Length: 374
Image (cartoon, rainbow, N blue to C red; front, side, top):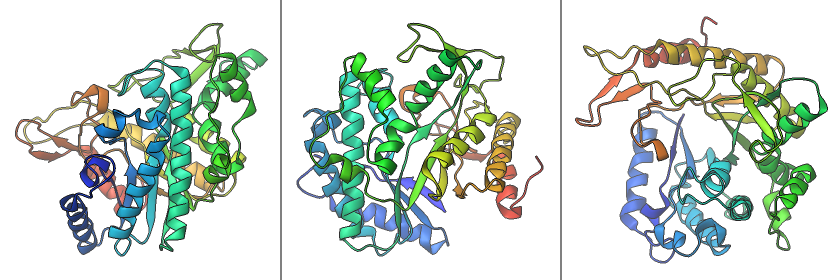
């Protein structure tokens, strides 16, 4: 399987209106090439490419963007439905599009407004639900779901304050984006918390029924976790991360494989036996090429530790059906630009030369053998 995303502006440069046929032709050729090489396409409809014309009208804070997205998705479905008959992802990492971008201000458009972030998160979920409905209405073959990013905050102690602080911090990623889809409602403990902070969910009639349209698969992206404890005024949730001395990747994220198992176990306990695909898991290490080789043993160690935890999840009965490492090649890493490297293939950004890293060869053997030494 090969997971890729489609750039909305390539299909609708203005967000709506006239279709850019050359854009559709590009993705048609791309998918044909995958199929010709025996590779199953897994298509993500939205990995944050929002047409500027729609952002100028408020972006995802404007409910009109919901219908514009569904229209775009329908065009893509019809163009590729005869080719991609297996797996579709509607929206990748809605937490990043909403809170990271509109409350924490790290990603574009760089806002610091909790109400705006809550609005965007809700509209993304409505767009997801409407897109799933459109997929069903068109009678398309295959499976469809979404891919939220998650983390895990382990309480530092058994005190009620620490436990509740970490529940809020983890729930920001899990329950806030999972409960509406699987239960048809937002988690009350976070609804009330946001209300105290001055933010209300802009639920319109019928929204929750739309959001909870049944899905076929759940994508999960996991990179990092940590230990947390209660501290009044710490962040949005009175929860303070603790430096326990865990190693960090080159982007500054703690390496916490136990959190991978913990959060998958938690999700399974809350939402049952929905088939799970790990749509992203990987590590940033900025190793450079030396004499035609890139030695990235720390990335191999990261992948080995997380795959070990994933196997334990499978052994415990969690229905994990697939795994994608992030990423195949070094790439543009959003607010970090080209300074952070996640790929198992090194890219020289001056010459565009590709060099397979040591992790590439290790992971290739894992795939071929369906086994690795823990």
